[in-house]
Length: 362
Image 1 (tube, one colour):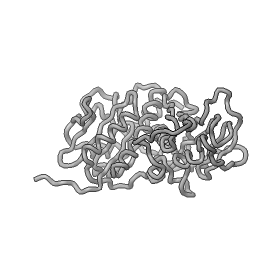
Image 2 (cartoon, one colour):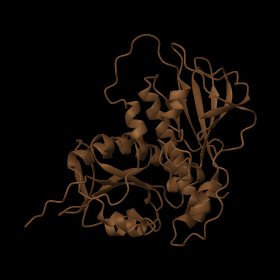
Image 3 (cartoon, one colour):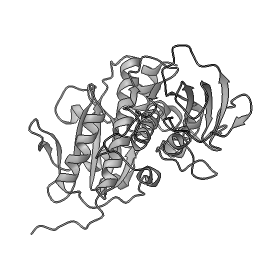
């Protein structure tokens, strides 16, 4: 698959064709399905980790802690389990619909303690609805799954999880290593999520009205910037009586990037989703130039999905409605801001709303 060509086509105005069958929602993992045993003292609880990150909460498999374009959930997980876990060491395929694992083979000799969750995709699931627009969405969904695992590890108070979102491999696209719990008492981390927060996280349905307060926008933007390092840039298109685009300044405040109303244009660029024109604000990740090679394409999209996944939790904590927006066509934000064309495309977005009525100015 030529990823450069696929992304260039996904960015055009070409409409996808009719829907096709999505195929099975879970890989045909070999061998019998196994329930996950309870975790003993000092062991990583894989049952809770996966329930808080990847497990389906309904029989259809649509509702999960990690969002997905069209609720198609193309991301598949393979566990490489080392010492210190509730499962014996080995490689396992995960079934998120039944919350079961299938033993695939022995663990590599150099596997570290804890588990490494390797993330791959079944492209057919997303392509069944989005057609040629699927590949950016597949990468963003993988980033969201990585964010869900990262947040679940934080909720379980493990040692700091390690992300691999460098884009250098296709199989797997990404990986998250979660170490076993650190022995002895640990001071609580004030920003760690709770299991209840992760299980309650859902993408809000439109409309997402009401302009969020600037302190809330700053918190969401800061989370995204800190979670999505690398070559991406971040800004927020703000509605209200004085619409503008803002970004974070070096002194930690918000500064104006551009004046004027951007939301109707964003709605047209986002597969014509008209409700975006009335959203209170839209967080935007942009970069990934047209000349980007496949590793850069994968890296930018993986980091964008991961960062928006974590920013969505920050939004929820501040009482904001939030919905990821992953499909973008002709969205050359850099050129719209007066820069050279084809250098800074919108990669991902998060629509935000406060739910409060707008204040009118005379």
